[in-house]
Image (cartoon, rainbow, N blue to C red; front, side, top):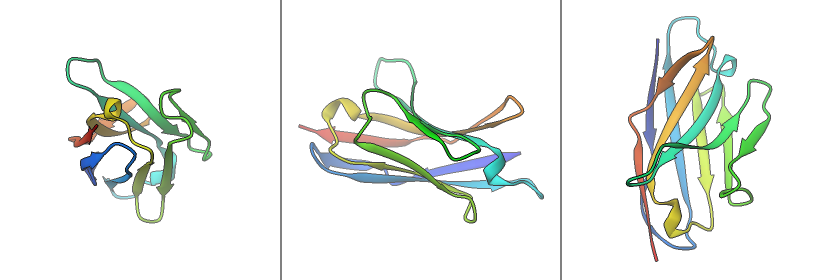
Length: 118
């Protein structure tokens, strides 16, 4: 069992920055580095979309819309996943979700709202 709690969302002007955090509570013996870790987002009226991924070997990938502006990283010693978001745009507005997966079992956080004003 994994519980994920996001924080760091808020209201920011276009061009600003935010850093999202996701703290994982793992079952006894669980190892955070064993999980593929993702950030998703969902804008109003739109489907949830994958924003960034960090694999178990540390490789990261990004949606085209955020490449060069967002950085995903993890601190496995702290069981924490981050998303550094720079040069934010109004179209980045949405609820951001932390997601981890291992052995095809998915775990989601409750989401944190990011609102970017123009």
